[in-house]
Length: 126
Image (cartoon, rainbow, N blue to C red):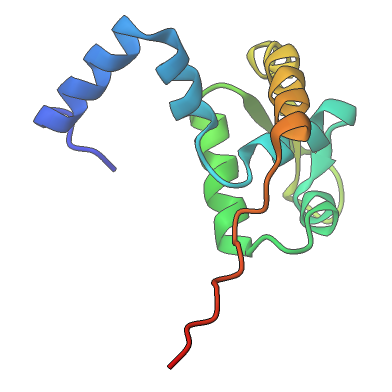
């Protein structure tokens, strides 16, 4: 968490005021957020369904990313009145749904420009 009165927070506020792209990147920053939003675009899902649809995400990371997305108003957590109690389902908000064209454009760009992130290091002769 950032201190509300810190220079870093003040600079961040100035940045997002001057550059809406930076705001979008900050809100979407996080390894799993785009994938979570993609999954929820298709249908509302419970935590366990989300976890199964992204099997390689750590539970702590998924929980943190869901909390951040909820704080930013992109998803909504609904507590269902079913048995067993406390079943929770996640839905995209209208703000979250509005990211669909942005994510589609990012997907297309990534598909066209994708390069391996980890390149093999050349062998060093000793």
